Amino acid sequence: MDWRRYWNGAVTNSSDPYQQVGRTFRQRPYTEKQVGIIVDRILTFLQADPRKRVLELACGNGMLTKLIAPYFESITAVDFSEPLIRTARHNFARENIEYHVGDAIGLEGVSGQYDCVLIYFALQYFTPEQTRIMFANLATVLRKPARILLGEVADRDRIWNFYRGPSGRTRYAFDLLRGKPIIGHWWRPVDLLALAQEYEMDLSVFYQSDEMPNYYFRYDALLELTRI
Image (cartoon, rainbow, N blue to C red; front, side, top):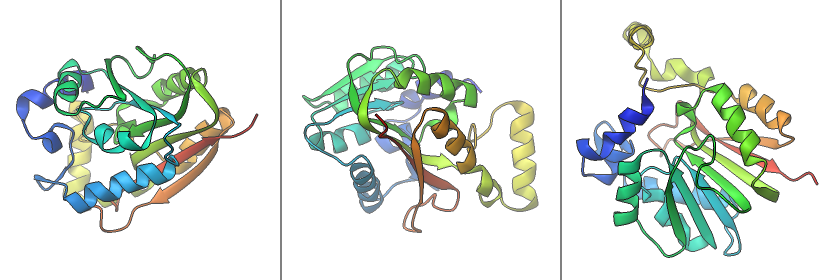
């Protein structure tokens, strides 16, 4: 799947900010309550502090970026889609946010040291090898203690909750055959644990309440770099 092409077309295909970044359920945007839950979880997991600097990778159109920005010193937000970054600068700008067009794997446009990293609703678009390279690069820009939040990870252990029944399994096989999966890479928590241990981080997994539309197949993963 050519994810760059897919996300470059998101702005063209819809003017709705929720549609642009896939924050919909059954074609309807997330409710204000659901967005509020997401924001509260991000702030809690990253231990929001006006002295902290955040690096957000795969930031999309900046909708979430602007909502959490008041609680941090600054946010450097990176996405490989120029149309989405252009939309972010136009619609979701704030004085303490810097938006950059760049590759999250190679950390293009990133400099300095950060206390937190946010990768929300995006880990599925990176292969395990790409993720390993990204984490190796992140190790060079994090200052301890640091936190990395991987939000709404597609759970391989619950994949059949998403592809339900015989029709769902047929759809899954068809998507693989044509090389255009609805969701890219599915991550088991145990796979993220191995990645965390490789970079000497602690991993905590948090499942969502049924107030959230994707609770039945997604989870949040928090990695903590505390060892000196």
